[in-house]
Length: 499
Ligand code: ZN
Ligand code: MN
Image 1 (tube, rainbow, N blue to C red):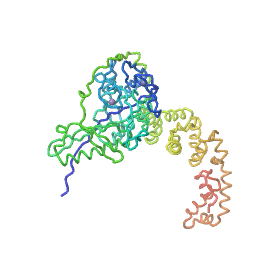
Image 2 (tube, helix red, strand yellow):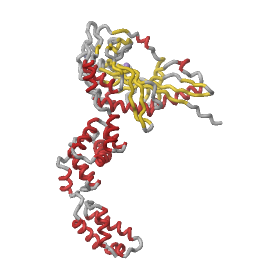
Image 3 (tube, rainbow, N blue to C red):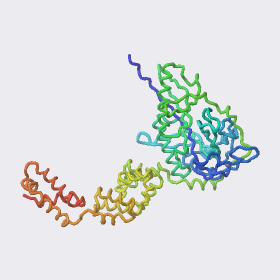
Image 4 (cartoon, rainbow, N blue to C red):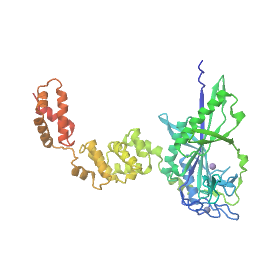
């Protein structure tokens, strides 16, 4: 007998670490530089040597506040720093400077697209903290020590890099929603310029909390909350959550005592190669970290003038821009997504419209050939480096019927390497639509003369004469190298081949 399906609802929250785009570290002047020679971007402060004093990077604080403002958070006017104690080789001080009871912001929301509308996802808090270094495992044994197993070395270049930790409410209902949240957040941070958001450099790392509410036999069961540590790709975020949902469901099905009250919270790692999570340990609670106020740093007081200045630096957000572009130009959702996918491209689109572009045609060209060329070059549409006025001109030529869409695509391809204007390229390549009926008429005469049988079929309205018309129309298009407007060709053929 087949088992009845068990009704369940995933409950998902995210903890996200976003690396802020500062030149130097959070509490010292060492440069933040990915891929530098290990342990070459360090100083006594980020090495945690005794007797040194941290000094707050003002820029990091400002970027953090800007992001918190964009997440609709309450901004605290008085914040302080705390030490979060734990022992790990990549943490030389044995504590991390973070924010505990007075984070710089709290109680916000970030709206994501869901079910054709917007879904607000609560932001519990966003606070500033320093990153740890990196343990590098499985290195070859040092010279002269053959036969040893793999070594682990510590690179402290990353220690002290500023991170904004964002903690969401458990408002996400599926792996897909978590994925959408993560990608929307990446777009937000790059729009704001507060982070480069490059996943490959670990500039955004995700830790989802996942459990299930299962309704069964008249009561609700909550499975133990799993915190999946340190996911650094959107793909692994989605897969790990999906895996964890199914794992918890299966565990509970075997044993209905697999519930939060009995098991507590668990930390898991994600094994990308194996495609599964691995339980690591029962999770620490806050008291295990032995938080206490950092005595070496003064609290930060954010006054009205400073906060107003930072609010002023927050630009129109992607979600607002999407709505405005759709409403102003009546663009379809798909092309708006492409246009707002990065800030520079959205700016370029609006500059082109200001320079006379036909918005709908330009939007179409963006989703067809411009994004195709951008993808091929591994960049954005703005990254192709074509001036707004040139984009505007090509869209206008297409909208006015001076070139047909196929010719427009050919001109666009030339524009990638040719600095000439689209009109000049069209002329040079013979891609302009013939506007004068005299020029087209000559091609029509030629086609009729070359195909007397087809011409006769049309004149006599013979069986399948429409097929013959299509054939002659094609022949004219070939002779004009696609420059004749098809409708005009058809009309001319019919006029000349009247019975
Ligand atoms: Zn340093
Ligand atoms: Mn953290």
